[in-house]
Image (cartoon, rainbow over all chains, first blue to last red; front, side, top):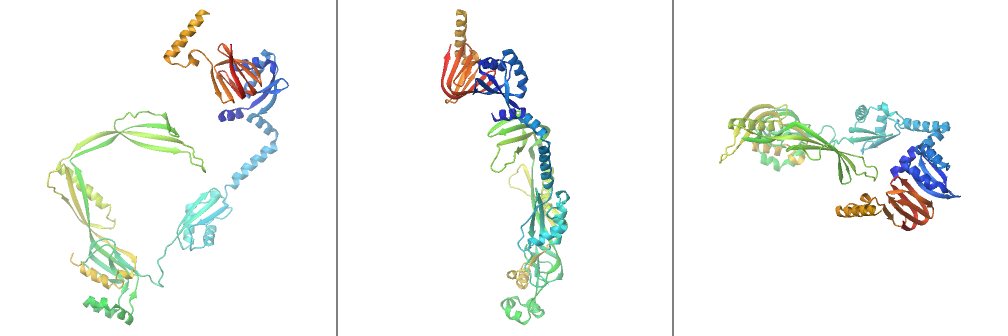
Length: 438
Length: 94
């Protein structure tokens, strides 16, 4: 009914009055000709009012002539009349146009700037940086290059590590992430070089700091390689001689000459082993796409699904499907339960392929190696790679292999110095030598 | 006339047997009453009389009379009439 009302408003309709005595003939004739009438009410004074679409008025004149009763138009409503009335009031129309144009023009400027995410950095500082980057109240939106401005603001304000800009209508949201700085200890920071991976130390080059491991040691991930703490010289020599004594009497020595802390730097290369596993079935079964596909388009209203295009039943025996659902975005609390669903069906074909043992072994080895190579950093040098077949007690129709890759790579990473991790490098040194058998 | 009665009887029996609705098979009106507010009359042959207290609608071979207060014809389509108002009676006149 609402749709009908909207339609009649768009088409325009008139209210006409007919004398009561010839109403029946009038109505019957009109309906017989397919003229739609509604809202038939008596208005008193022996006249009846009825409504009719604008397109029905001309045929009604014919009907009136044949029934010999005159009708009078008493009311006009709808869009066509509204337009004709408006066209007489040009100033109003111009005003409305000016209003819309002004609204549109004003909406192309930035009116609000919001800064979020900052705790230590002043909002004002960010706003000033934004102003220098060319973002201020009243700037036209088309002149904004958000990516460039983000970089510009991040460059200007030192305490920010990331700046994101989002233009949302006339509002620009600047979201920032502050840098998390390690606690400043006045001057140089205490940083250790720590092993990133398990490995056997091949070469070590200390630029600054105190090395706690030596070439040939095995290290585990997380172990300190070059310590930030440099013990006083005399202790250092003592240290080499007897470790137990040193650990017990650390404090008095500290008093004599304090441990010096530096930012440890250096290059530590180690041999690192990677292990991987791969398997290959002798008879490989799977499905392969044939290239044939079919698209189904349907509209889902509530729980009901109506197919607009495509098959009701998928004509393939084996197939894969990809569904793409489009829905009208929810606005406030109004959620329109209408979804457009496009489903693409791809036909598949099963296949089975048989490999010889040698072939399967080669492919399993390749799989194992590609699995390993994902973990190896690009800078690493591969020294050796071996593939072994894993023998099982009973013969299987599957070939299992284990691959081992040996690389030479840098394993040192910088980490803030922690005192409980063997801060003076003495405990760490002990651990390093303890593991010196690999 | 006897032939027409026979034809109607045959038609009714056929529609009963096939469980077809009578309004299609026998060209009968279908009248839906919503409380005492609305009457929908489908399959009509035009209106015979209209006043705010009385509406007469011609159906296949009878006349349906709707009486009440403030009756208006909400809409008239070639095959449906909707009468609105405070309806008190709906009766058949032959």
